[in-house]
Amino acid sequence: MKKEIKDKIIETGCFFICVGILLAIAYYTGFLKGFTVADIQDAYNRTVYNFSKSARANKDKVAFLESNSKNNRKITSFKGYRVMYIPASVLRGVSSSGAWQQIFNSDKKVVFYLYSANQKDFHNSVQNYLGTKSKKGRFNCYAYTADQFSSMRVGEGGASKICDSLDECNMVSQKASDYTALSEFLKLCGKTMCIIKPSNGQYVMLKSKNSGQAVKMINDLVNW
Image (cartoon, rainbow, N blue to C red; front, side, top):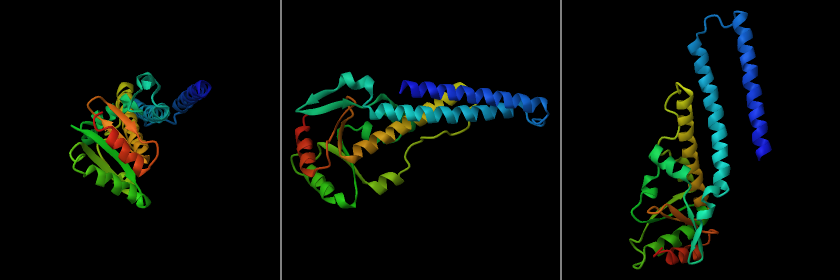
């Protein structure tokens, strides 16, 4: 991984050196006649933003899928379930975009999952159990079909305008990256099921999409 990052840095450096040489040649040969410094600066900002956005998104996705190494030491357990902290990038994504606040700012623990047409038995089992007298009102449940989730456009995830400085480009890139981390977190949880505890920023993920195991986990985590 370190070698790959080093190669990418070298490749990027060579790219900008080549661009600088080409711009110098174009300037002295008169090719850039009619272009202003502001035009060149705008093109530079766009290039830096796109590269930074791509690199940061890839970095955050890898870090997230590796269970956010900074939080590994914070992993605990409750009744045999692995309790993990929600990555900071995900929470920043909620704050900066305003998306999925009903989940991450819920006043109760949240049951979240996605289901397809051939997983309706799983969905019905979970919904029926959450509706029983002993569990009713103990959780907030957010369940979506895969199509519903993929078609949703919530919050503000992208750039609202072209950035005017490198610092602003970095801020815009960070916002887009955090939104991506938020989306990836929900997609990963949706593959099985997650119970999220917003009050302390923790979550537990179901190992496999099995209705019996899902019902048991809900029951075991009532008093978590």
